[in-house]
Image (cartoon, rainbow, N blue to C red):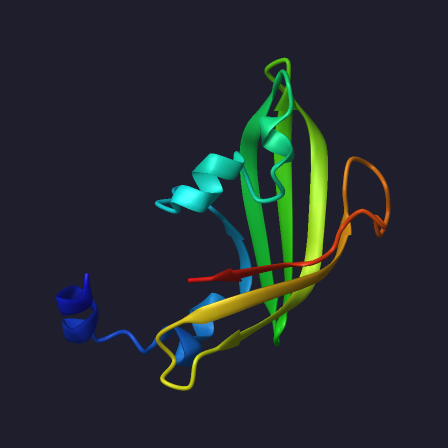
Length: 118
């Protein structure tokens, strides 16, 4: 991956204007994400599983929306809001979430914050 990235004419993630906008996550290699069964961990609840994950990046703000299946039907939406930034060399991106709507509860007091680095 490092060789392909080094040879790519695309700008670094930090400098790439294509990052801004709405995205659907279509794959994941994170062991932590897979162990947790999604972004919030609620996908590991009985009869529940992750269905989809969407991100929106806008000028330093990030919003992640996690859709969960209950009994096989996509019925639950969790939304995490925060900010994102980059390492000094632009090689890593970090998302810091400080507010979340979980299980239908707006700005859930149960949410203690979360950080993800890619």
